[in-house]
Length: 502
Ligand SMILES: OC[C@H]1O[C@@](CO)(OC[C@@]2(O[C@H]3O[C@H](CO)[C@@H](O)[C@H](O)[C@H]3O)O[C@H](CO)[C@@H](O)[C@@H]2O)[C@@H](O)[C@@H]1O
Image (cartoon, rainbow, N blue to C red; front, side, top):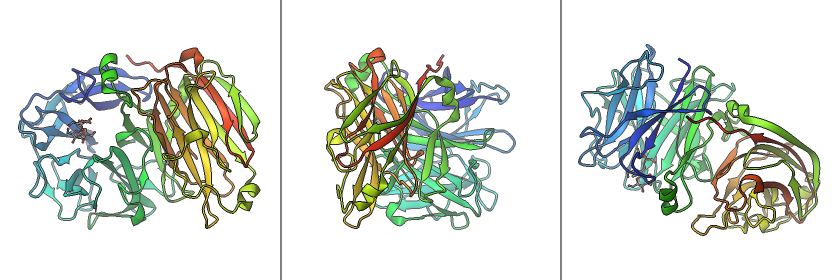
């Protein structure tokens, strides 16, 4: 009926985790939101210690089944059901917990605190619904699958969907198909030729979201990664910054798969308590398979965010000599959408024998550390003298084998003069194919910078806490700190209006 519903983990009592309740917000465009009364509170023995993560499944007859983890009075993780009290209410204000809860308790061999976060259900080859859950046995992260016809009684399938030793507890598992040939998203039950499946897990041990592409055989209920060296939890990350417990859903009206993610704070808990809130939802992202590389997903801010764009400033062919810094005059630079491309003379790169072998964003000296072919990119949330700044950049390294690798990094080391803030340098490699220039898109919004490298092949979410580079004092620069290449930049920057949150 035209509304997107977001249900989220919320503590009504404090800006720290606890008393977990289901917050509820609605939107027609996923950008402007209305907060509604809580959908569910911890008030039953089977969820009194918390109404934890769950997922909705919309059945063919329009019924909505909500399955969620409850933390019981004895701190056992169980799975429960809830339904909208009135399906014809477009706001879905009231939720009824199923009288037969819990519908699932930890099976033999699974710890009572290691059994949570049911996925949206999909239909198996026998017509039965399948639901996946995260768990661990010893240090092996595992996805279990249950089958059901009515969502009230379940059978655990013998085969686990997937398991990866050493990855620990898998939280908020997400499992969905992507088309390798079409650009539209797919409903969760779709499978067949031209389809790969993404398996995503949030690793409790290091609080990062990992994914891998693979093939799902519904007969054996086995998912096999395309590249076992890049398996779930040991390979690609959904986001290389502060980003966790993301979940996707299929937007049937616009035939796209959308991803919502949680970004916590990287300042102190005391600061969160003082300001009275903590954590953000990132701008929703559309997810597709990267047909060019065939090896990763692409994440891109939903089209609707562009409605917030106001004044546009364009810079064409800005020449960035080695060591240069160019201010961009775009007014108050705290709410921005910036797209920038960078061209280099590739013959210089080809002629080089090796450069920065073993480069790593996190252990590098950041944006001020100069190499032959990087860093170059944008500096955002900077004050005039750049005592505070958040650079986002590319860095090209060349191995002894002559192969060049490009890194996409975000450097928070000088993002704030405040002392109680984590200031890491985030990032990873990003595939840049022959003939492509280097491209990035940044969404800047006061204390968050969402950076999308090469069309969303590598994504980094940064939380930053500038004290000087705020409001009209916030500036943007182009920079090239490489010693061996001149870079030509093209930029389109939009100042962004605020979203309406009511
Ligand atoms: O709210 C519970 C749901 O959230 C998830 C995924 O984020 O689990 C989070 C988790 O950690 C929270 O509790 C910790 C204190 O016990 C706290 O330190 C942390 O900051 C919180 O996010 O909740 C469980 C239980 O505490 C813990 O094992 C997780 O890491 C999801 O799995 C839950 O459904």
